[in-house]
Image (cartoon, rainbow, N blue to C red):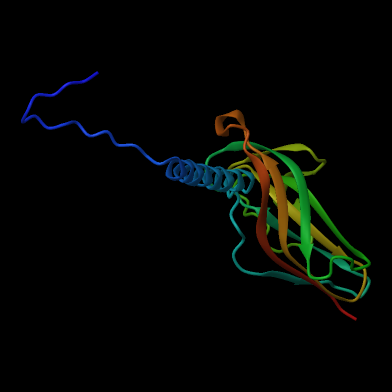
Length: 191
């Protein structure tokens, strides 16, 4: 029991009503869940790969079809090994008959520019390795991820992007997710 003498202030005891305490705990929990949700979304939507600037276009030499190869991931930033887990092209006409999309890793020739728009990416590469998922890809100055678009029917095929699923290394806590890389590639086959 606490006693006071005359003239001394009586210490005040502050109590929080039970309803206010529950509201405070609820608000803190809501903020914590929102931050965790945002962090989870950022974690699963990495932004490591740059979008391509500009449009690459090529016309097939004949009505029997042709192909367009373009570099989809340029050598930017520090060298880092990724594991490619999925590659899904985004086309204007997803179910277009006679259209094919293939991916390869181009091991560059020394001092060779990356293919912008080429009929055959192999002309720019020491070797061209087809992608078989899952597959290791070394992002850096030597390797490029190349998209090859083929069409065997008259008309225009347009790839607007590629959804790239990848996993990073232990240095990045094995971050994994899917990133849409903007690609603007157009192949025209004469009619």
